[in-house]
Image 1 (tube, rainbow, N blue to C red):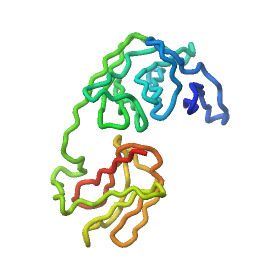
Image 2 (cartoon, one colour):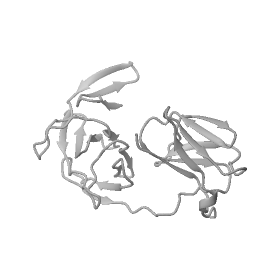
Image 3 (cartoon, helix red, strand yellow):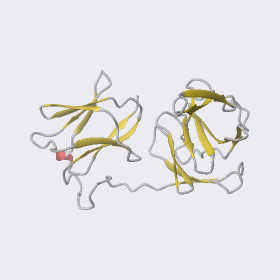
Length: 225
């Protein structure tokens, strides 16, 4: 298990069997462009089954780095492209590994990218955008769409919680859960107050989906703090 210490480029490995940490080579401050950057909001890590770790620095820096565990060495890979919206990696960014490829969210926008590493470590791979369908993500293909009159209102309260308000009598029933854009269930507190559902505990910026045991499409919640 690996982590980057926020506000610095310090990098550590954790050993659960001994409940201990070991310092590893820090993420380099300067990349090929000569810009010094610390790891800030939007920094992300992902480990692969090939013994490599990939990292974003975040904080508006599009540098993309790979780390080889045994020689304890960082090598800069291709920067994540700015894309048509000229967006940089920021809070809400994330990385995941699946079947030999890395998938990335930039944060602060809906851009979603796929990275195909080369076989030889340290060789720049190829980052390509993944097109997202514009219809709502739905647990059932026959769910359809909600008209404007039936869509719930999303409100961010002053205390940081999220309120979801449905039109009278249309709130969902049954088990309700919140998942992120990668499908991971979120540990948060859900409480009802009349027709209003209050969600507390979604600390980071990002895109989330509120799902219920019904035929309705999930409710999309976008948080930018």
